[in-house]
Picture 1: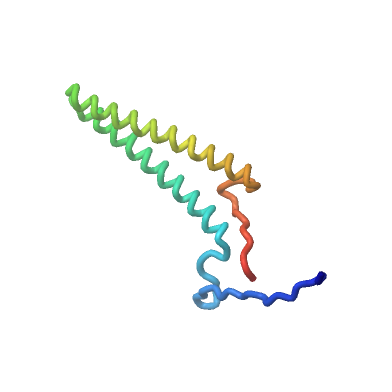
Picture 2: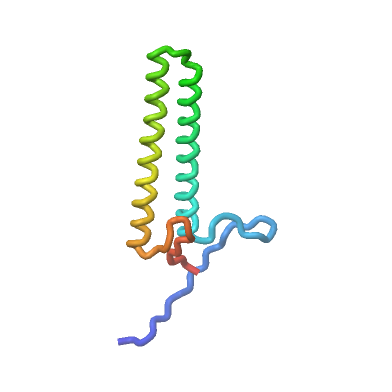
Amino acid sequence: MPIQALAQEIKIDRPTSGGKNIGYTDLGNAIGNLITVAFVIAIIVVLIMLVLGAFEWIVSGGDKEAVGKARNRILNALIGLAVLAIAFALAQLGAQILGFPNITDKIILPTPK
């Protein structure tokens, strides 16, 4: 049995702009940032829906149908917030089970050099 395997080294050229590397150097960093951006966008959408529901409630003028619509919008936004919190907790749990310290940290995946 051979003790050592002599394999060819793989080099991947990264795109550069003015001598600086652009883009991500590894897939793990890109995935971690994508997850973070997705959660931030989802939280912003939930907050917008809450504010919109509150605004609809204020301008309803006592109309029961308009108040009901506003209440449903606020309730749906709160349910969305709860689902988002559960999804974040499950993502954190999954990351810990897979050995990553935190989903928002850099996920280190093997990359060719």
